[in-house]
Length: 501
Image 1 (cartoon, rainbow, N blue to C red):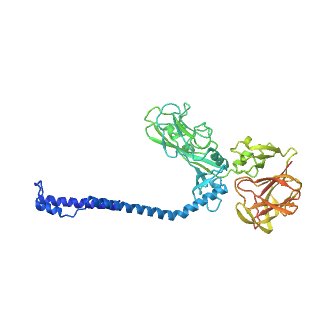
Image 2: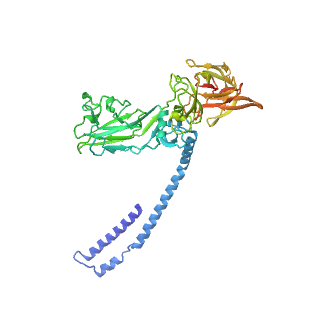
């Protein structure tokens, strides 16, 4: 458009100069040009209107073509990038990553960006932003921009609702598997306090998952209605026990309170409510940030073998089958059939049946945790965690101290790293702790005697399960294999075997 504007400007400049020439010929007192002057003017070559329209159309056509060419060049330059990103996202969905923390462990996902994850293993992934430097998963909502708190009268008259870009089930699953979650919040005020502690009045609050009122703006203690300035003793009029800046400003000046809400059980923020206006001279605004979760809440080694069907599903288990459960510390271990394919996390809905392993029926026949080991040949190539790797037999194992080691039939060979099934029957085998990660370092090769020789299968801790229930014939050999090709003095391998009667 710059070129066409220059043409029009040049034409008008030329016409204006012609008119000036005409005026000088006519003289300042003449109303009509002389015949000579008229002939002079007619002799000037002017661009007619049709020519101008044609030129304008031609220029616009050129500009359209240039825009199209620029778009095509941009597409060609970014085609590989978008294709790779698409492949990455499909790959991510297929391997079932439940958080950005898990995603970062996979080669090719080291850079921050938008990705798809499936925290609840629903099969319908959600798009999140992954800050790979902080290893945080961000879930956005529709109210992240600063919103004015509009004037109204009455308690709780103003309500700002927040709708998140992820279903409730996915958010709850992400929280359950994360070590920490938080949201940043900022409240701006001009003579609009959050509370009056002297008279016990609360003018502003937020609601979370359960819909109850939350009066704190910082931290995780619901019993302390404080803002971020309280942690650094920098609140205005803190000498008078003020815990928020906005509670201490009585002049028509703007102030603000910021904080980080870190009680993940109450998050995310669903609404912000205010009702402290008595004059239209008062003003306020509210800003609520994204939900951000990081870390992993995987169990510590000294915890029970497992918890419940619900907690196992939250940790990533997706397959129906028997799992070892222990819902309370004083209860004995149970073998529970968990129907993980059912929706939700309600224990009574997921647990179909259970067998008490301390009551003389089903029982734990092996429970070992290995501290260190070496390896031995032969080498075998196995497929695990969506890849082929070389595995070696475990050798010269040392068991971990301060761990409840059980070998009911003394059938575990520490020197050669295998267990022999003592009696034919139904067994449940659990390898490691269910935490949503796939263990590439260890697997268990099952050699079962059959009429035609030996049937070989393998068990390992995958993204989806670490528990296997099947019928074993007496004499079946469970050989532990590893990818480590040197002495490993800090092994994390654990295996529990339960005989189900």
